[in-house]
Image (cartoon, rainbow, N blue to C red; front, top):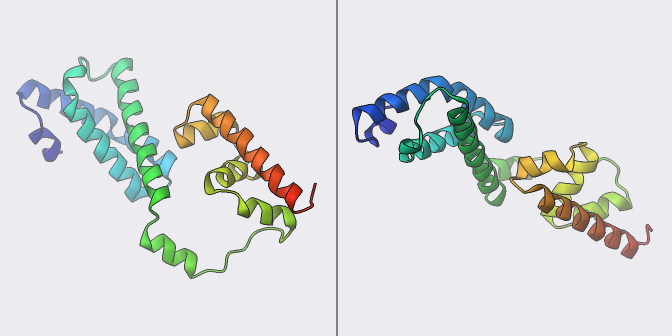
Length: 172
């Protein structure tokens, strides 16, 4: 916490930040972990969120109020989503080694599975989250940091692309 306090100028700001830190750190970790599903990544997201809060401490009047609660949760959600996106774009070496060290097994070695695997990563992720894991478009939008309309459009495009691939493969 000393790192964050050094970013602040006045004793009032430091006191306010300390109250926020003590009040919300557990909640912030929980929110980040729900998005990232990894302890270290969640801790990184919480750290970045606290840096952002320290930078914008003047926007906070009361440390324990619904407005502050919403503000803190929103910041940590955005940081966790940004962290998630960074991890998706640049998988860690550890993850790459793990993937290379195992034989990929996909349920059902059939034509549909082959078509799904040919989809661009973003479309494939949408199809799998929506139809294999059973998430709603709204839930996927929240997970990926998209607006609902953007997620709906992504779902439509993914289905259209899959349909086209299935037609080319002679499935439809």
